[in-house]
Amino acid sequence: MAKYLAVIGKTEYLKLYGRKIGIWELLEYQPSGWLCSLAFKQSLIPNALILWDCGAYSYRYLDIPKLRGNLATPKWAIHEYKERSRIGDIIVAPDSLLLGNNINQRRRFNYESAARFIEFTAELEGRLLMAVVHGLTVEERLERGIELYNLGYKALGIGGLVPEASNKRRNIHIIQTVVEELQKLPSKIWIHIFGLSAPAYAKAFHQLGVTSFDGASHFKEAFSAGSFFLASGEKLIKHKAVKPGEIPTAHLCNCLCCLTLRKAGIDTRRYGSNQNNKGRAIHNLNQLIIAQQNAISHKNCQP
Ligand SMILES: [Zn+2]
Image (tube, rainbow, N blue to C red; front, top):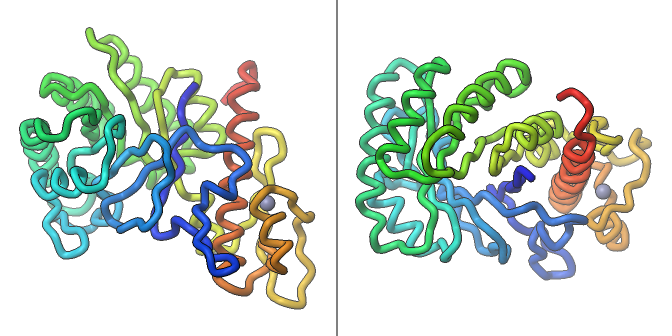
């Protein structure tokens, strides 16, 4: 089954009764692991598989990748991963999205970074090294995939698909083409898809034999748009959080997060405190995982 890695970004806990509760403690079902970005310093980390990401999405508009005041070089990333990762985790070579006017410079950065990263990792035993495949065309992605494999990577991520996330047909076509080629390589490799986690994607990834994928859009939308999702089979029905005094359109939810917060007088369907918003985000993650599982188990339906 394709593994969903939930994302730990700015928010890794919710404070309740004076205690920091990890967001994983409020989930009905645990994801297969988590993606943690070097863009943030997490104070709590779940005891699970972690894919450590260099944070390329955070510095996507910079031609020279920088994070928290540091140049995001392979050496710097290794230093960070050494401090934070554990044996069994996955670590990603710094990469750059192909955006803006300096595409060739970004392409060069990606190649050189992947080549140097793999040389520096001798001191980090037991981690799975991942490099990210970028390209403006399917052909370019195929070339990059083979190139990174030849550098010695046994795990490859496919990136740069988030801007067209709503165009599922296009993205799934690209992913299918690249994944089928990568699956023909002599050694079996771990294939990860960055940033796409809607149930329809989960279903397609499962069918294609993708190893893992991540995504935080449903979680983030709780903050950015007040979205409150409810799983209905393999679909997510979107409601909007309401202001104090208004009547919520969504029915009461009894997921572990909503139930726990309701006992503390916090309704995740409403705006209010930071706890309302964080609770709604965790609730959305609960609903997403339920809808993904429904989508994957209905194998006969079309994506
Ligand atoms: Zn809920």
